[in-house]
Figure (cartoon, rainbow, N blue to C red):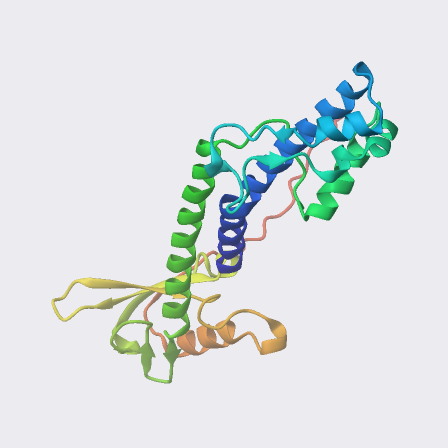
Length: 250
């Protein structure tokens, strides 16, 4: 979970800080390439007139510089690919390869989307980044806290995680109904005030069930049960005899 939330946080941060803004730049420049290539056949241009025309053109970048990459110089002149008469002429009917050439040269890694990523969309990425970061911090806290906690048992004493040791003779009940399916058990001990204290035994957190590691959780439970003399609650498999169904002829 820590790795998953961490990856989410990084991805949303990258999109909010750079990714969506770069997509917007790709969106605006792609529109410039589309317009230039589509309008080219409509004019009577030679190399000189096209160069003079193209050198005066700028890319329409909208009205909000905050949704564009930081440091982008505005106004932005048409890229050199659009000022090249031969390249624009060859791109008539298919502007995308010429745009991809520019995008590769300009280091724009993101493909243009069909729509702009406005302020709201970018803000949403920051919000989810914040939530993911909070989850990373929370998960890391729980992980560190869990890793530092231990649970142990010897012939006479049970040492629960995060609590005072308890003589096994003072344990009143051991609930094993979820041990085989979820690796979780519960036991109860008397507090100094006389009330029962419920103690959770999580086999996956404190030991584990991997056979190549000796199944420490199972070894823990066997030792606890061997010294335990109270009530044990668990499911018992009951064999039932098969029911004979009489044949229709009987």
